[in-house]
Length: 378
View 1 (cartoon, rainbow, N blue to C red):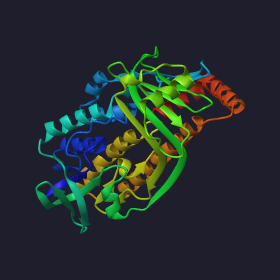
View 2 (tube, rainbow, N blue to C red; view 1 turned 60 degrees about the vertical axis):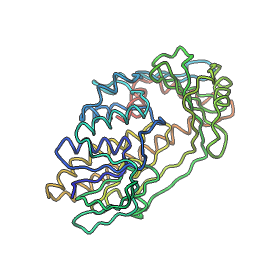
View 3 (cartoon, helix red, strand yellow; view 1 turned 30 degrees about the horizontal axis):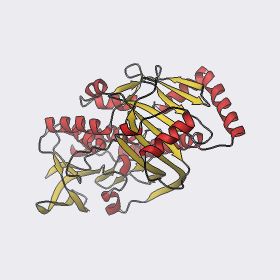
């Protein structure tokens, strides 16, 4: 019997596994995908997450690969509305690190394999979960057939469509939003350098973030009720129409669209199984908090798992973990709602008034610093 089975080999599951393996815990990671992820929807790593990732020895490597976003600028009608510096948010990591999720996952997987080369099992589909109060049994289907894995504890880090959450019949609060977005990566044709740019236009927001290798990500709010079919030329047309920036559609290297909803479970601890990351809370990608929130879940949970394995009664601590992490998720939902509200289309008079209000708020140092802290999850 192993100590902990982690369902989900994405960034959160790999990070948690590395934390546990460093303490000599036996871990088995069950990942449904047969190969590494090549699609990078998440790119921003916030300062608290860099602190957490440093604890498993991968932060410095990621920093060397990524782009350090130390400043964001808001633009409206071709005029700078506000600027925001992140230099006060952290003494060690005063920036948001922009690095493709695929590279982040690759770094985490390398670290896991360094600690235990056999801990990650790919092509593993979970079909059942059984908790008898003393241990957890997980039914798994692989290319070799069906099997059952016994563990002292289980953690679900298997994303927004979490199989484990469904098997547990975990209640959730779900909220839908009328917002939809298209995003894509293109060769950087701007002079923004390492800065993030938010174009607060009356037709809807356009966001722009630097990526390594002279690439820039563009995200545009669309008018559809659901996620639009992504098209590189349509996206570059929106960017040009709203911002005046010409982007070469032929340089597109990633394209995606998404609608928005939030989902929060009412409980993260179910007997000997815990839900973390997107399995526990789905947050709007606008603001880039989802992956980071999952890492912070895992960082707080890991010591409690170690205590449970040592047969220490941590029932009260687990209740505190659940309450605090669900509160953090609820705050992230509220922040994402503010971000989406600021990006919605407005009639020109209201658009001018909103941008004037943003300009005034950003000119107040205390408000500006507080907003920077909120955006970087500090």
